[in-house]
Length: 308
Image 1 (cartoon, helix red, strand yellow):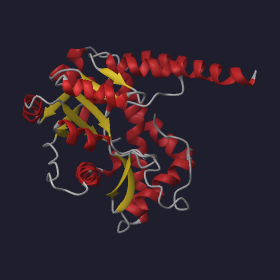
Image 2 (image 1 turned 90 degrees about the horizontal axis):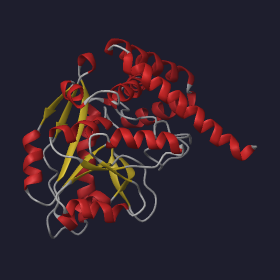
Image 3 (image 1 turned 120 degrees about the vertical axis):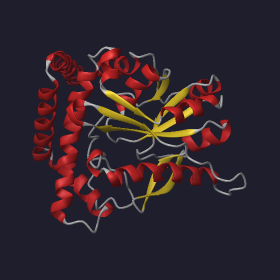
């Protein structure tokens, strides 16, 4: 009976999400945003563990800001991720034309120049803004990409999320044999999207400064870029009024000098610096609930993942 419990729970979770997806698809935009706000505030009030993680992270990242200001940012971040959940469900029901009507593209010429180098493109971002929008909208303006992802424990929800990510032509790449598949896509002059702000363990981790604290970060982006010559283009999706978004493609990250003694770490630091710049500008749009830094386990309590 105990072995069946996760299966039953996963089935219930999947059915609830599908029902919610159908309902959200019928809602007007204003109601979608309002439901997201209510959900985010409710989680902020009820989820004490992740609220403590966010408050501890912000206290270390912005020590000069008052406790009241930091708490306001935490509340706004929870509210943002509530909206993000409902917006993700809403966008999953829209046609390609409807998606494009809701997205502004900034930096398209940089994307075309990056593709024009003929070495593929590595698109980097973090759990910031509406990062999933990149996978949905990019193929409609340019071409499909590979999306590097982690498998969810709930198989049915994972299949649903995979369908959403691939509905505009993308390919989802999971960790198993991921480097080989990424190399193949780059050699075929395609793009690959990678999140760079998760805590990484193992030989692939490299420590860089993120908000003046050491953070274990994936070295894969830097290693692939140095090996293939593929340009690294940061991309961020910022919310606009009325359920619209601006998808910003930044200038490619400048690679380190050829004679650099620690090129991978230096390149990874430069990528992380771009993400930090955006988080400092819009701190309410980043996932402070994640235990990004593990250098002081006593300061930040251990909790489950906040967002898949």
